[in-house]
Each structure stands twice: as structure tokens, then as C-alpha cells.
Length: 57
Image (cartoon, rainbow, N blue to C red; front, side, top):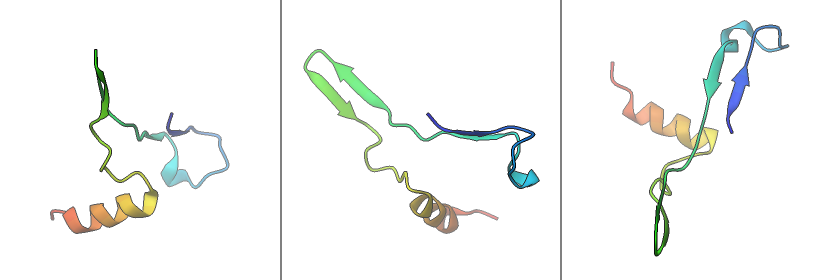
């Protein structure tokens, strides 16, 4: 899972050799499973909005 851009791809140079990985953390027990990161934003627009409000200079 995730997005990996390596050198040689037809992508703007500033995006080369970076990786983006968005996953959920899940707690699995003998009685079931619970997604611990269910409220974490995963859509690019939501992540960018969060980053814009939480940015520290």
C-alpha cells in the first residue's frame, strides 16, 4: 500500500524518490478487532487541510 515515485518516471522532479503511505492501525484481540486510526484523515484534501491548520513556523 502507498505511493512510491522513483527516478525515471514521467513525474515532476520534486516528487522523485519520496514515498507516501497511509494505513490504519488495528488492535486485534481474542474478541474482535478495533480500528484505532478510524478518525484519521486519509483523503489528500483532508490531509492537506489538517496540515494547513497544524503548521508550526
